[in-house]
Image (cartoon, rainbow, N blue to C red; front, side, top):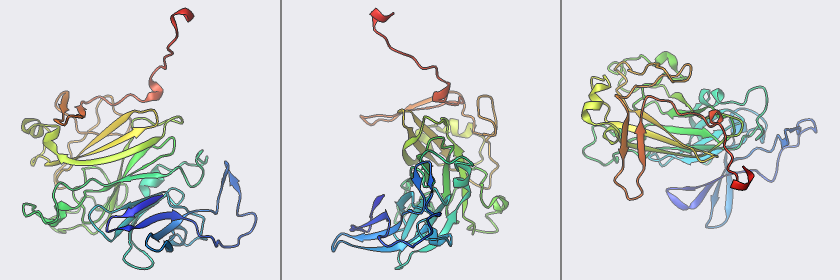
Length: 339
């Protein structure tokens, strides 16, 4: 894993392993489904000016465990906070936001329940205890911090960081938000659930970091995720003014965050998340065709939009849930002579 520092292009953040590892007993290094545990990667800072590297942070030390037990699965510099670096670990089932201004990075906040909801369970995954990696993405905010038209500096912050595991049978997209990040996409948080009804008039900025998950439509042993991108756009890219009013909100949502994921068989799925006012009651509900336990905001009929770009992307919104690949009967193309 390599990620360039957006503030200094001659600095690289890397997941690597030190040449000097702690001496452990032979029983510690056991093979599990072909993967040797105890060789996890930590976060290093590499300076390309002099080819030097320095250990910045270790997920194993953060969990008070021996170095090398946990491994870093994903790295992402924050889109707006130049001193924040996002780090994920499949083995630790956690996502951290690190302050890298110090020689040894400091943990700002961490999330665990979205990763635990997507854990491999009692039977270890084919990718081993360290997993196949985690895709992370942050939508670029629709306004810039120096935008004079912005109502609040908080509106110029990315609404969330989204994570997606690359392992087969990955269940959901994880959403991780700072305490000051708004809106909440009107999803019940899996972390800090006791604070979801705190009035924003009483507490102007929530002091609780929250997380949520959105289920993936295609989950099977033969499918894994290879791509993730997020876009923050105006809600009018999908709905017009009349349709936004028909959703039932007192204040129609201004923006929509699109979470686009791609599977190993080439299927592309899009989660359209309305950025709504957390003070209003959600209009999401269960209706026919949704998986068990899933709620969504029903759209008024079938809506199809097309961007004006030469390489356009067709966006279709409907109340039907995508059919997973495992439910589609495979077909075989044969020559005429073989029939």
